[in-house]
Length: 239
Image (tube, rainbow, N blue to C red; front, side, top):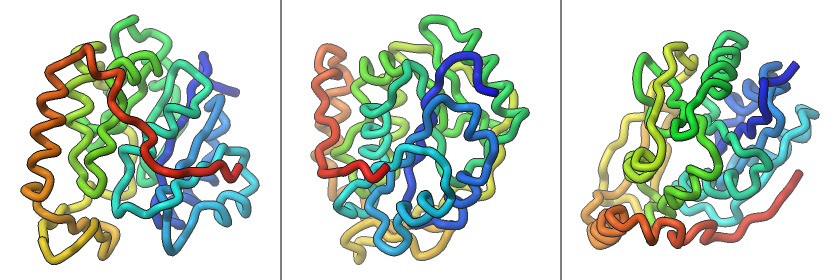
């Protein structure tokens, strides 16, 4: 069995082996034409041994340098390597179910030419869990990789994407085994830190004020979105 049309499933990963095992053991993966896992330079629990042990056929890419948080770049890399027009982005703490996949399949099949599918997480807008045409993703410029270390790129990217395609929120909820992480601001850290499964510690945004001003100004200029720098890091394909 598979979805009605080819869809690439893109999953960033960082040091979360138990949830990655859960994803790889999920039979719903077989519904997707292509599955890409991007290991964001996990320092303690790299994805390669887990994926190889599972025996599941996925494409595995690894970013070589741990920038503290580079999920924006990981999503861009997954989109660059995707073979299909439709891409579905999710995180390892979401749980695919047959009911959700059936609903996603219907939404993608019936999507208008200027729509993307926004998944329903905890009963509302999840920010960065969505299905989108690759053409719309790149027309919006992809994610801003200048925001390494900061969990804030989703809204900035969506501001661009929603001028190109209209978000259609699914009614069916995508189950999750973890609520959103609490972000703590602490200038004593030099890079983003994950002290436990529910907390993120990062520096104050004042340290990137000039970067934010530059990105917000760039967001007002559609003619430059396609030139936004992408994949500005070293990576290699493992599988």
